[in-house]
Length: 318
Ligand code: GDP
View 1 (cartoon, rainbow, N blue to C red):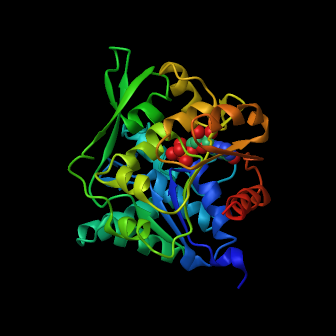
View 2: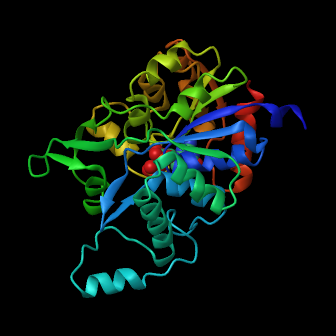
């Protein structure tokens, strides 16, 4: 085993952006040395199912089954269920593919049998041949609510904002319903306190709706502030834009500059290092001025080689 494989990493992760870097780590590290804590603020109850979009994205990505064309869901998906649902006047704003339904059915059965989300996620991951540990941030329901400045929308459940309204309502803030009463996943806390841990990596996920729900859990911010290991974030903003999704649009609406320096400011007090894309190397100084180390490399992950290269860059920085 080489030195890289022996490093032990804890990732904080949303869906698509986070899963890309998690995949890079999974290809370099001994499976026992990678724990991925996933946002569940996007979860919701729909058509009788409990849907966990970020967990499913991470599972589909790590098992090599993600749909590269759509950028979400499963490869080779078919839509007969949706066609039938639509024909019969059902709620069709959230697309559930025929193959994807198998995941939701299995989660529902395991929930009905009294299993918690950690056990269910472990089962779904191992059924997909994944050896790394994928943990929901909490077993308790936490639901991200989008506050819109448009009175027509008011407060919106996350998937209503993200999928039904296609991220169009202007955002004025966020609220993580249930977070105060929730308990952070004990396995997550154990991983944070693991004496063998090498680093905590905040993946290039949406800071407001993918990472902040994790940070909103009681005690988690404090644990990140107190940890002895480096906390490294990868900026999800490249050249003033998000690679995908509403991160940059949200920053605009929140009157935050769409820069990696602003991402550093968002995580100030929690992170030691921010990794910025080559495109944003001119922001190194602004990041350093915040007392945060700024490292520059290619952070755009198009190919699997890009994902591995970024993961290797993070590991080599330790
Ligand atoms: P979601 O829950 O599916 O929206 O997923 P995430 O929150 O994990 O990912 C969305 C964020 O990932 C966006 O802010 C994107 O800019 C960022 N992102 C996606 N792909 C990449 C990439 O290749 N490199 C970087 N640096 N950021 C990325």
